[in-house]
Image 1 (cartoon, rainbow, N blue to C red):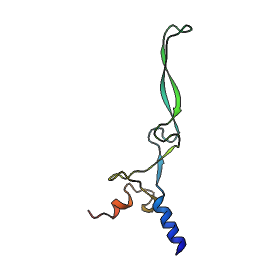
Image 2 (image 1 turned 180 degrees about the vertical axis):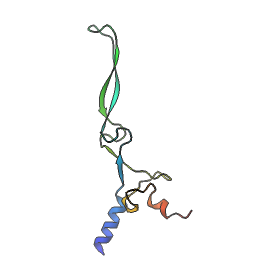
Image 3 (image 1 turned 30 degrees about the vertical axis):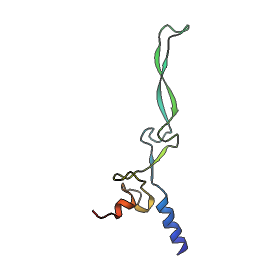
Amino acid sequence: MGRMKEEFMRLQETPVMDPCPECHGDGTVLEDAPMPQGFGRDIGYMDTKTVTCGTCNGGKEMERLCTECEGWVTLIVGEDATICEECTNEPH
């Protein structure tokens, strides 16, 4: 029974991870970088640069949040779940 209890605890504490909605799992995003007029250039222009995603901080994944209470959806309710265990157990 000890191993089953440990497995249930792990499933209750491990959030379901989804690809980051901002960078789509890349960890980086393109950001506008204005290039001003200078001595070697007669006109300024808009360039882009690659930066670390600010939403996931380069981690490429985010915890799935409950659609009702904004808490984490953990593995105990299943990989396809959209609501957390607490909201699942609440009477409607």
